[in-house]
Figure (tube, rainbow, N blue to C red):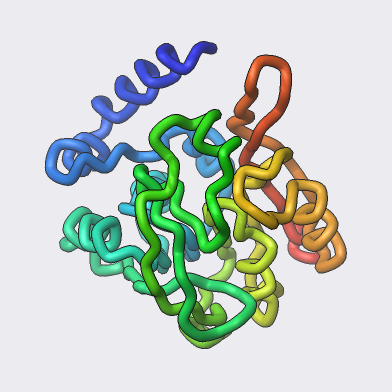
Amino acid sequence: MTLFIQRIVKLANILRSSLYFSALQQECVAAGTEHESLLRTLSCSHVVDIGANAGQFALVSRRCFPDARIDSFEPLAEPADRYERVFKHDGHAFMHRVAIGAIEGRADIHVSGRDDSSSLLPITREQSDLFPGTEESHTQTIRVSHLQAELKDEDILSPALLKLDVQGYELETLRGCEALLSCFRYIYCECSFVELYGGQALAHEVIAFLQQRGFELRGVYNMTYNNSQAIQADFFFAHSSLLE
């Protein structure tokens, strides 16, 4: 399926949902409908959405899990503001204006021309060549925290899904979540096969980290290719001890 056709299909799916259409019309937030087919197979009471941007994944989570609590994490002010406007009438969706990582403190984020491609790691030339418009525009100092400093284990409602879309920072973010990983049944994480951000861990490293902590890879979704080379995809893991 070509990129143009993918965009047409996505727009059609957005127009079928009043929730999605309202977010697009009012705040130009396009729900990540490509995730719906997976989420509809799951049962979730809680979604922890790290790298939320303006709520693209949270919108799909709300449609698939109408009663779930959603805790979203986004350190950049502009997309976080848009998220809060989209979910202003949702009493179970919460924005945390902080990044999650292994080391707590202040750090510089490399802000992309498309803010959903911003990263705590430097944006490489390969990233901007493959995805035009994602080159760095400036840096900004943000707060980085451990997940357990923002949420307690008793706050996480089972069954829970941990979602990461952190532009190359996946392994450091998982380390920042490590104390609470056992609270999650599912992890859904975008990973790359090539270095799009300087020093990033690649997909096989993230898979190995999670396997060592009891999470089994159960599916790969939304694969992106450059000609015949796999670039990135969304990886779905389930905790072996929590599966029926």
